[in-house]
Amino acid sequence: MANMIAGVSQISGAAIVFFSGLVADRIGPRRAALGFVATTGLMDVLLGTIHGPTLTPVLVFLQAASTVCCFPAGFALAAYNLPPHLRSSGLSLVIIIGMLSGWGVVPTGSAYLAEIYSFSLGFACLGILTLGLLPLIARLGSLEDRGR
Image (cartoon, rainbow, N blue to C red; front, side, top):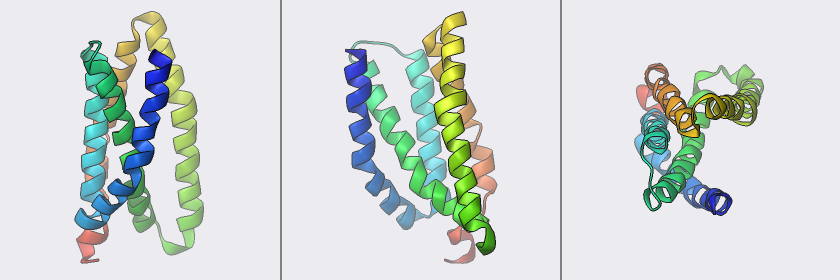
C-alpha cells in the first residue's frame, strides 16, 4: 500500500507543475519560490511529525506536488541571477547538484536516520533544512526587483 501511495502521489506533481509556472509568472519567481519552498519544507516537517492512516497519504500527495512546484520559479531565479554567458553551464551545474542531492545525499541521509532512529526523523530534518533555504532565496534578485 505504501508503494502504491508513493507511486500515485507523483501524478499530483505532474499535474501541478504547469500551474506553478503560471503562479511564478504572475507573482514573480522569487515570491513564488519562497512560497513553494516554504510549503515543501512544511509538508516535509508535517510528514515527519504527524501520522495517521488518512492524513499521511494526503501529506504524501501534497509534499510531492509542492516539491515539483519549486522547479519553474527556481530555474527562473537561477537564470536571472547568472550572467548571460554562464547561464547554460550554470543551470547545468544546478541540475547536477540537484540530481546528486535528490538521488544520493537526501535518500542516503534519510535511510541513515531511519536506521538509527526513525524514517519520520529523516522527513522532519529534510523539512527543517528546506525551510533553512528561505533566507537564501529571499536574498536572490529576480525580475520583479528591476521592474521586469
